[in-house]
Every structure is written in C-alpha cells, then in structure tokens.
Amino acid sequence: MRLDCPDWLWPQMADSLGDDAEPILALMQSRAPTFLRINTARTDLATAQRTLASDGIETDCHPLCGNALKVTVNARRVQHSKAFRAGMVELQDVASQAVTECLLPYARGRRVLDYCAGGGGKALALAAGGAGSVTAHDADVSRMGDIPIRAKRAGTPIDVTGAPQGKFDIVLCDVPCSGTGAWRRRPEAKWTLTADRLAELCSLQNVILDEAKGFVAPDGVLAYSTCSLLNVENEDRVGTFLKRHGNWRQFGSGRFTPLDGGDGFFLALLDRNGERQGADLGT
Image (cartoon, rainbow, N blue to C red; front, side, top):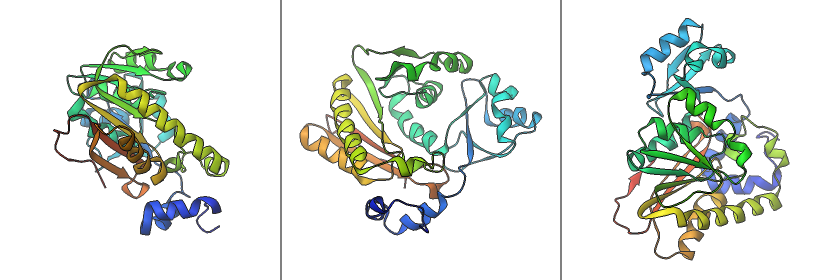
C-alpha cells in the first residue's frame, strides 16, 4: 500500500530494480514531467526556448539528453504554441529521447525501420537526427495515422507502411509491453496488468524479435526497446532470443529509470557479425 504496487508484481519489481525499487515506486506516485524534443531539422535549442517563452512557456535543459527541454511553466499551452505549430518542438519523454540518441550513431545516413512505430515519436526523432531514410511500420496501421501530419510539420519525411520491404541498416523494435516504466503517465495500468497479460506480452515480444530480425541487413543492427522496468520483458527476452539464434549477440544495453528524470526505458543492441565494440547506453 505504501508503494502503491500490486502485491503479485512487487517480487518482480524488487528483483529487477534492487535497492532502487522503493524510491522508484515512491517517485512514480507523483505526476510525470512534461518534456519536449528540439527538432534540430527546424531549429536549435536557444531559438526554441525563446519562441516558447514568447508564449509564456518556460523550460529548462535536461542532462539526460542534449535536445531535451523540461517544461516548468504552462505545459498545457505547448500544443497551441508557435514553436509547436512550426515543428520546432515535439512532445517526447526525455528517456525516450535518450533511447533514440543512443541509436543515432548507427542510424545517421542509413536506412531505418521503426518496426513498432505507434504514433511515430522515435521515428520522427531518428529522421531529425540524420537517418538516411525512415520507414514506420506497426501491426495496427491505424496507430500510425498521425505520423504523416507530424512528419510534415517537422519537415522530416517518413515512409509509413503496413508491409515493409527489403533490408534495413537498423531495425528498432519498441515492443508492446507492460508499461511499468510509464506508470506516472498511466497510473491505472498498474491495476489492469495481470500475470496472464504479462506472460502474453512476453510471448508477443519473442515473436516480434523473431520477425524483425528478417529485415536487418547482414551488417545491420537490431535494437530492442521497452518502457518496462521488469527483467522478464527486458534482459530475459534478449537472452532467450540469443539462445534461439546463436549467430546473434548483444553488443550494448542500457536502462533508464524515473530516478534519471523521465520514464523507465530499456534498450539492447544486437548484431550478427560480432564485430562491433561494446556500447555504453546508460545507467
């Protein structure tokens, strides 16, 4: 009751987060901050801050990501502001931005497939960050309905498709998950999640990884991401994938928690050839 956590889930939280479990769960009982991503295809950080300020929106830089702004005053005005309408900023959690920033060294100038694109936040960030081309895919095509509008506003072309073709230099799987890292934004989710649903999600994550690897070019990168804090959806899913496919290996992984300022996110980078050096992707 003190940590507002379902009884059945507490052992997994404690096992996954160790000594950080209690402070993270305590923090997630408060409202999530509002973060913006500076669209470097349109503007720079200083100009974006000035433009936001002209509409009474005050912001601070955030150390987790170089293009992130935390809104400190008048967050509700963002979507009606000049900066937002001109495509200078996008609403995106700072940890989600940090995940994208970790991918940019492998995405700049390359073909990128966002395999579980949803609303397209990471696809837009990768396009703005210099990806050669970005294709957005989702099993539920209707979830991508806003991507063309957002891409036009941002000035970053994105190909939206329900059936990707060919091979890509980097394939991102930001898979459906429990969302335990984003409970501050969806507090009801902690009570609707069940053990059976968690098991279904883990099975689906396995399927998505197996499907997505077929789109990775021979020397490409497969990126696996969740907004979950649970090992069973993160390290365990990567581990079982590697056991099923012995020619793949992990060369980088990272975890962000609400203690870093934003939502909880996990990222792992995989390749076939084993030639890449280990990548330091976060806490």
